[in-house]
Amino acid sequence: MEMPMDMQHQAMGYDRTATMFSPEGTILQVEYAQKTVRLGGSSIGMVCADGVLLIADKRLKDKLIAETLAHKIYEIDSHIIASAAGIVSDARILIEKAQVEAQQHRVVYDSPIEPEVIIKDLSNIKQQFTQYGGARPFGVSLMLAGINNKKPELYSSDVTGNYFAYHANAIGENDEKIKEKLREKYKKDNIIKKNTKIAIDILKEVQGKNFDLDRLELVYIKTDEKKLRRLIKGEIAEFIK
Picture 1 (cartoon, rainbow, N blue to C red):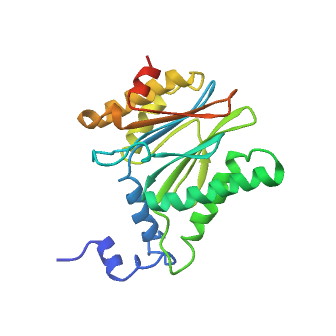
Picture 2: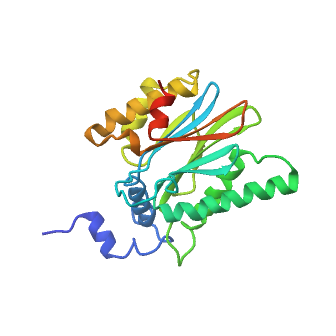
Picture 3: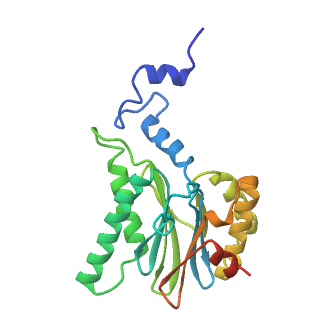
């Protein structure tokens, strides 16, 4: 029995390094990393009329874990937040780099850093790990939201190091299904509260019986405040009433 083509290529060693292209013109290590991202918890980001929001499924089921420290959405600066899907420890390295860069910018220039500067620099780091030998690609996609002057912005960076600006986006498990629902229901003119309810309804529809509001974490930044607010468990249900 003849081996499938993808198995033949693996047997020939095309997946042993991030510096080798397969005959189809792909980097198999990068494709494996993309599959890892789709196993991660879902996150949704939205640009709203009055700010920007990220909502993420923490997927914490172990009651022994202290949930107050198990965040899925990270503070980069008071005006920038980020969520990750994939290998969380990979994300932590990138998040810490972003936090240091944001603080250095405040010290040197006495002003808040632009969100695109952060996502571009993180994407450059991720791209390097698809080009040089001796290391694997970062197995994580990042979604970054923030306020640039008085403009809410949302960016996503994939494992290859590409990044794009979005009005709304999703990463992690069921990302394609969630994005299809976002194309139908998302409205940029909605306020944060209304778009939060839309995001929760989409997650409930996509996840079905696995949906649990208590597993969600919501962080939003209002344009006029430029200060993040974090809600978990019952706080989210109260917020969307």
